[in-house]
Length: 235
Image (tube, rainbow, N blue to C red; front, side):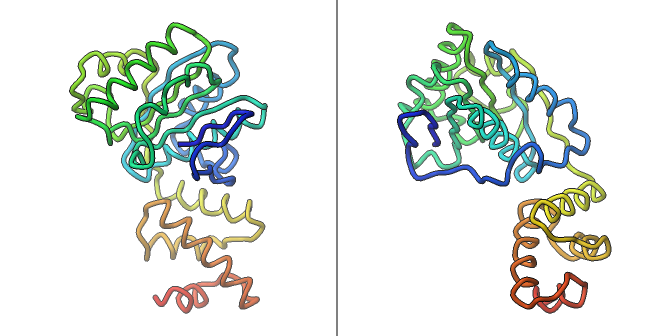
């Protein structure tokens, strides 16, 4: 859980500085990104839920939203529920006073009474104050989360709900080239297509591999070519 206030950063979890809106290839998701940016630009509170399979980019977008608000000097909270063993539901206490609260991977707490109630209570407090932007992600629509608390499922279904559409292979190539460009190197199209053909197409795997190839090319002082990629990755 990241609590970014003037007073403290709580717990040893920090947002990646390269996951911003500028580094996110939108693919077929311009309406979702516009909705997120629109909510951040408003002076009042709002609620937005979006879902995708694991690795679809939902954490990236939450990190981007937190980065944008933090850059404005606003207080934000990021709660990754897949890492909830690091903290307890009480961390949500008082978050209705933040400018932005992002709850990631809500599917992880389905059936956990304490967490479900804590999120339900936070939602209601945010609704009362009317000042906090609340973004929640899951791996499926709210009504399919198998939550034990019917009122929470109902609340999550109230606002703007989007599916984060998966990237096509062409979009993934563009996303890889965008990341490479932001890192200061070029990813030739033939090399990008080779990676997509030979590797797991999950974007986190592709990005991690790209970072590894960047470091290897700098160390070897060689450009990214298919033979160099084969040699480095043992393909």
